[in-house]
Length: 458
Image (tube, rainbow, N blue to C red; front, side, top):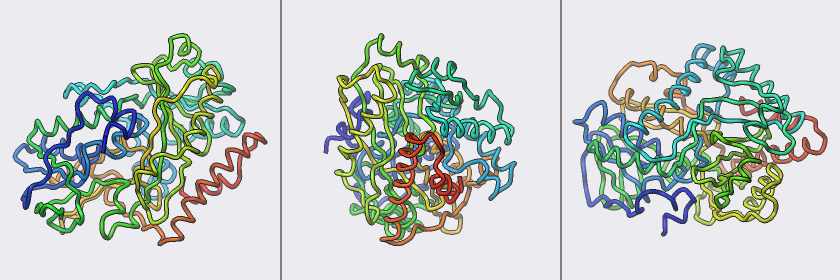
């Protein structure tokens, strides 16, 4: 397998993707972490930083950054998959506010580590502009700002933009307004995860790549090469979790796909904007996301690929020509200056993890030594760092502001067995897609999409 072919990001890292040595046999550790993506590596980083004497082993089926950490949209954001009202209903207003403020702090914390560890990941604090390009989208933009105000977050956290203000940041076609938050940085995600892997190794952490874990149990992570025994076992497998025995219904792997253009000329960027490398989206139902890369490409992605029966994950699912074509059409609709002649140089995809209640969680059960984090629903670049810091505190038995956050030890319900899971996930995708199409024709909000959003607790 050529790991460079998995995404534009992995094709442009600053090191060879030569796998580290696999596990050679039986081993012992104080903490064994399954998965060398952001969650596993951030957990290792903060544990090793807090206690350099810990023996920490990370096991990875492929190479560090193989999964979503090396293929995502490069938004290091303060976004959460669960809305503030939903968090408040479950845990109270103060807990919801604390969770959001922790995410704001997380973006700054990752920026601090990037500088401290000299990770060249093209970090740029440009914030996020979310455009409104129809009446219903503008209503959702206003509602998002009103919701933020209700929880005490002012214009410095989320601001409502008029048409001229929005266009000044991102000059897409037909912009009526939008929202802007400074709590996001554009990043080269594969450079971040690979740099983080080197940083944990400098702290004495051992990473074994090409080492698939076939089972996790109290005190052990089992591989074909041998078992790593440790009093603490951390599951950090996100969208790949269903491949572990006993976890098939814990997480639904949903695919998100991306494309990238060649570097665009300065004259084209003058018409598009994104001068501060803002990440961008709009207020449609089916999520789209993009950024201006450090070398002047447009990297752009979106949902819409189907969920595959039985939570299957196969290399062929990374590429859906229908979805790639739709992403290119959407780029042309957003930015007519691209016309039909600007080609796509890269197209890729991969699975992200969705819990049944759309709620990310982090937890540690001290009695059996099992810890976990995940269910980020595509918001994992930032959230995984908060998860890693929280797991480090939980594992070390520290009582901190992080360990009191409402997502700690939250247990999402299991997904339905097949074929109900396949029907439910793909029905949701179809509802949102048809709602966007209906709104573009009628300029009226979709009642079906609103009802589905309420069903998810958003």
